[in-house]
Amino acid sequence: MGVMRIGHVNLRVLDMDAALGHYIGVLGMSKTGEDEAGNIYLKAWDEWDRYSLILSPSDRAGMNHIAYKVEHDSDLDALRQRVEDYGIAVEEVPAGTLQYCGRAMKFNLPSGHEFYLYAQKEFAGKAVGVTNPDPWPQNRTGAAVHWLDHALLICELNPEKGINKVAENMDFMKKALDFYLAEQVMVGPDGDIPAAAWMFRSSTPHDIAFVGGEKMGFHHCAFFLDSWDDVLKAADIMAMNKVRIDVTPQRHGITRGYTIYFFDPSGNRNETFAGLGYLAQPDMPVITWTEQELGRGIFYHTGELVPSFTDVYT
Ligand SMILES: [Fe+2]
Image (tube, rainbow, N blue to C red; front, top):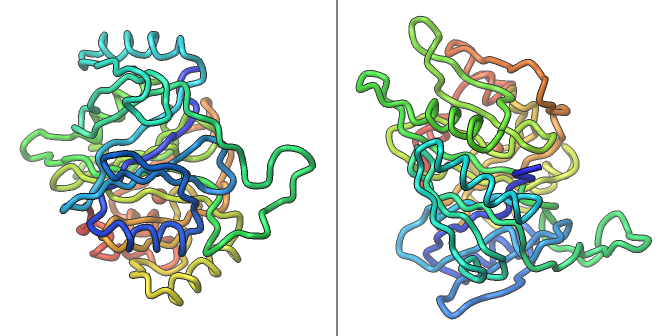
């Protein structure tokens, strides 16, 4: 089957105690491991693998790497070949290099972001178990996010210099990793320059997204919630905990998701994302947003881009 879903992101944080207060206290994740380097591993209650978030102590915020899980160990060899045939060097790293994971394939996307594929991660189980489970755990805390849903990466885009890493990533993800394009933003006088892309391997509108910017970076990672009510309550919890909110509850035109954007104490942007949007399928026609309607694509109600949303990222 190849790539199944997003596996984890590794974020750098400036103050680990403050970060844990955020990801555990506010978002409701649980600590499930740590290593000698001081990295902390966390999972959400509805996930079954050992972790979906690695927090690494650092003096600079941002993302170290992003990892996707493939279905079979043999997929790793097949995809390694595809990535190398595409012209990108791949390094195979032994089991345990990614803590609690089997062997992995490491490479950089055309945009420069460090990317891993792995097939095995230690099993932890959902908080509600799998035998006659409750719909949600009674002892959950904070917003009680279900799972890490997707990430959005900023890729260098400078059409005047002929640089478009969004387009390069789109092509690579499609040809080498069999991702499908759900939605795209096309800009320029002729509307023929890809400036953003939402791509999937699962059946949700996106497992990864790329947006053009001045330089490569990490825009946000999103955690899933069930409903609009849950998004509202999550915003309440953020306010109670003085979390810096970037954009209060809103609907996206793109993906149709219900959203809140906010920052962790280090300045890494997070999102809570609710609603499945629509069923994404390989034969679904690609949705295109024009430059004129980009604001409505991002923030459907106001139709206006918030400057911090496009300018601030780590
Ligand atoms: Fe998102």
